[in-house]
Image 1 (tube, rainbow, N blue to C red):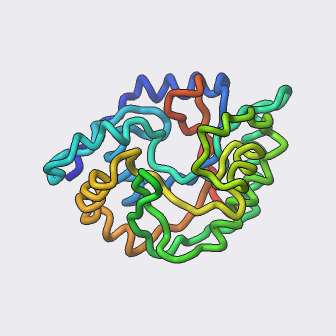
Image 2: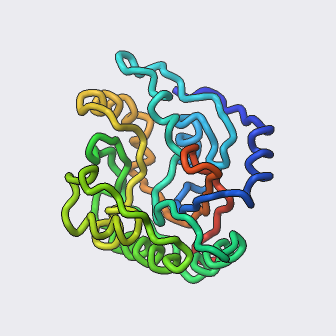
Length: 246
């Protein structure tokens, strides 16, 4: 199912040279390099989290499904959000943000997800824990709080674009730039979407044999990654990954 991944070193070097010029930042979970989940993510999304281009996921075995790489190609790469993209306040440097994240992760322990499953979240296909994981929820809440003083206050959004949200979720969006934080947070890794329900189901059925063993074992959240982007529209690139527990 997987093609061999070939890294475009030129793009990787370009990512490194532009790290000081990012306009937005985010904090995500990304799997430890070399793990089965990391290998799947690199192949499925056709890119590494540092922006390097890779050979995309093979379409063999996905008969009847539109080329999957066209959908995941819009994503940063395989990740679970812990702090939605934000702009740094005036006078705050990247080094200060990185130092805070190093300190934050050093004082927190790894968290196991337990078994995972493929699920629908609206029009998206996601990986998420089968059972509630309070430790992950608490880590996400702490992550939002710990970096709030670094972020510019979100701009007011047009309420008509978010009519599907509850009043509480709209308040969270206005306060933190994302409606699914604090008590509304649920750990998930987006794989595809937005797609119609029938299409999501076909993708889910095709991916399950690839992900079944990974889902059965679950993963251990053993680090958080700092991401940035230069234009606000292109997929974000990983700046660094910092282990929980130091």
